[in-house]
View 1 (spheres, one colour):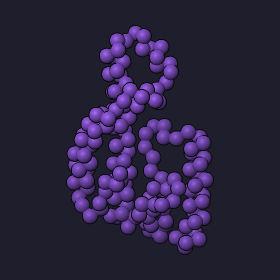
View 2 (cartoon, helix red, strand yellow):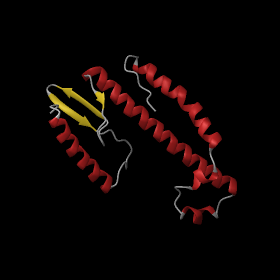
View 3 (cartoon, one colour):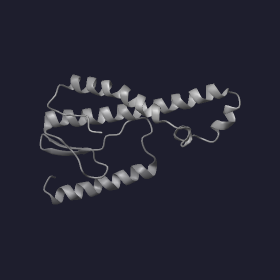
View 4 (cartoon, one colour):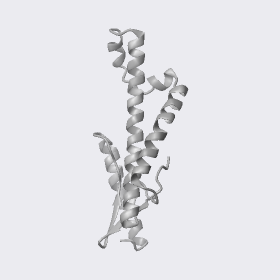
Length: 147
């Protein structure tokens, strides 16, 4: 989902994002199935479920789903906001390179940026793959005279 247009006020961008958030949440909830709620749940969760009523357990599952959706939408907003600010201040661009979200030049230095959020955004394999992708991106950009 591309939500940014850097020719508009950032406050408008954020308000537009928030205004579109709730209708999207309602749509996702109306299409939600029990399989969607259970697909990524820890099996040890079921041991704890025996102390809850069905209603309490269903509420827990839906609350978890909504929390995850909220984090996803916030991450999208923050990424798009970073791209918009970079585009406005430094003529930055959304990157097409693997693991790189943003490219811009500032004071003669060319930056390639991967935008991550959350406290545990990647395991060691993902981080190592990202490092490899950044090395490849650096080589590609050097070939194209960006660096």
